[in-house]
Image 1 (cartoon, helix red, strand yellow):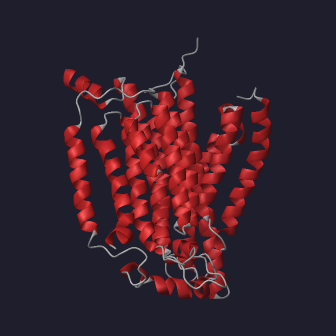
Image 2 (tube, one colour):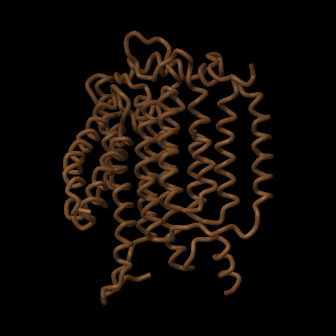
Image 3 (cartoon, rainbow over the protein chains, first blue to last red):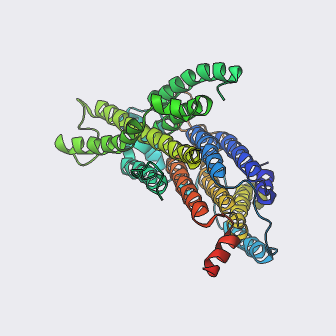
Amino acid sequence: MMAVATVAIVVQRNLFAVVVLAGAYSFLMATVLVALDAPDVAMTEASVGAGISTVLLLGALHLTQGMEMKPLHRPILPLGVAVVTGLLLAYGTLGLPAYYDPQAPIHTHVVPRYLEQGLEETGVPNIVTAVLASYRGYDTLGETTVVFTAGVGVVALLRRLRRRDGKGGR
Amino acid sequence: MKDYLVLRVVAKILIAFMLLFALYVQFHGDFGPGGGFQAGVISAAAVIFYAIIYGLPAARAVVPDWLVETMLAAGVLLYALVGVAGILLGGNYLDYFVLGADPVAGQHRGIFWVELGVLITVAGVMLKIFYVFAGRGSEEEPPS
Amino acid sequence: MTFASHYGYWVTIFLAIAGLYIVVARGNLVKKLVGLSIFQTSVYLLYIAPGKLIGGTAPIVADGFQVYSNPLPHVLILTAIVVGIATLALGLALVVRIKEAYGSIEEDEILAAERGD
């Protein structure tokens, strides 16, 4: 279903429909994430992707235009490049470990320690929060700074300077 | 939008629940899914919902610009200060186990304050971006 | 055997290629940003899907569950989602400014205006 939503986004030219489809796509992604045992990530993806990002896109559409222009020439070369890249990547994934394999490297290095000792060392049953806030606290500090920087950037780009005559400046 | 009675009534009920849910997700993030980011986004969404139904000036009256801008910076500052507190009490930067009587209580306290800092910054940023986008559209129209 | 165990990777690759195609082949700036966010969500899938173990549960320690899915990708992707929306917001702010400066958000029209100047 997500593939259908994606193809519809590619083809649609009415940008409002594209935004709605993107929200539906985010919700489908959140459902898939719940099926993959990731409730934290699903909650964040649903609220951020289907909530905030839809609001921002609609706000931007209100400030710009609502329809996409017809392309001037047929995009054969980008389609070919995309398909070839996809095939190369698919060929590369044959060397990757199979899904659901408990012996795959991502399950055997540092994760057993987090899972076994996380509760005693931090007292927090939610291992994801424990890793996010305690074991990898620096990364979360960096991420909060990135969010802050994005906010400052948007304000710097779109703030209106008030001149004495009250009109908005550029 | 505030002429539609159904929307107004539903909004009044839902916004209270949304804010409560945001606080629940924040404080229960230790025991279930959740944490600072989700709670920040949900609480910003509640205020955005209020702004959509009742208009941007009404939302600006409830959550003014200076408050949002302060929230932006205060969250990151709180996070950084928790790290500095770790240094002052004898450990390295962002060590939590020195913050309490025993290491586990210290971890609890550290995680609590850090998630609160994340909540404040994320909510502030989402709300500020919405204010800027929505406010720009309405200022575009020249006064007749 | 290969199909069932690697099917997830190919779904991820399809979504990534679709996002890439939108960014490269479509001229509308807002649509390019939507394509970029589709590409980002495919990367989330790339990280989280291999972390799931059959019979496992969400990585919240509770009595009665022994096998937990891998929590490390969840942490990385939580950060990635929030950074993704920060990027989207900045991109949209730039698009609004471009519209005000050039009067259009179509790549072809903007390039023509640049060449004409």
